Image 1 (tube, rainbow, N blue to C red):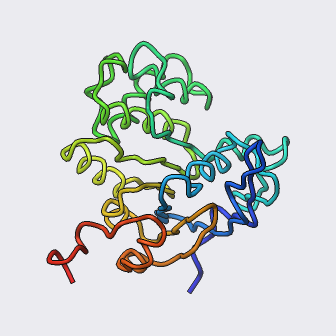
Image 2 (cartoon, rainbow, N blue to C red):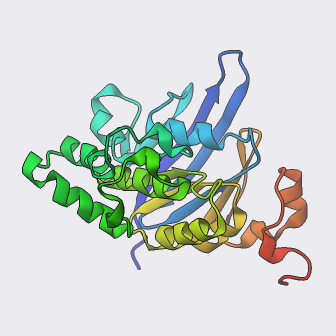
Image 3 (cartoon, rainbow, N blue to C red):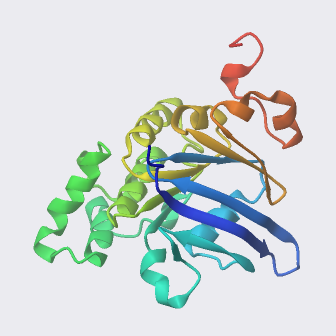
Amino acid sequence: MTATPVVLQVRDLRHHYEDGTATLKGIDFAVREGECLGIVGANGAGKSTLLQLLAGCLEPDSGEVWLDGVSLHHAANEKARRQIGLVFQDADDQLFMPTVWEDVAFGLAARGVTTAALKNEAIAVLRTLHAAHLAERAPHRLSGGEKRVVATAAVLAMAPRLLVLDEPTAALDPRARRHWITLLKAMPVTRIVASHDLDMVLDVCNRVLVMNQGSIVRESEVPGCLRDAAFLHGCGLELPLRYEEGRQV
């Protein structure tokens, strides 16, 4: 049986703040085709720094990241770097056009879609996330959940090889959160999801990395270590709600 291809390979990735504080201390992991990998950890564990390094927003002090075997840390490989699409926790950081469809069309234009086809193609991308009805709306008039969907559509419009999402369910009401979980499960692209929402990770991810103080301290299939209350507590995390006493054994 042929093994599923590795899409992303990270080896000995390290990063420091300007004051010398280590934020990442030798990160190693791989992501396979079609996988949804969860990255969890308390505030300050290094999750957001890791995502920004993967997307090229920051440069590592040392270590390597390969996408489909191509190193991302050389200027000549800027095209490969753009194949990692990052959706920020705050969607307002990514939405800047007058209407939703124009935000999505921005990425399509970067891919060479003709001006005449931009609007129809943008609405088609929005439709994949059940958001075509938002096409003519102004982004600043949307709810938090709607903004996050639109920001994700704008990234998907660029046809990334790997989609990276930072806290996709943060600050969402229960209905918007359930909607997001449904969308995340259905996305036909390899995904990395960094989150404090361990119940969401249980729902959408097949594997999880736990970070603590800049290091990966455990890796497992889901649910795996997400049922280990003592281990999670030591990393500044709580058991998922479904595994709390009296809910599920």
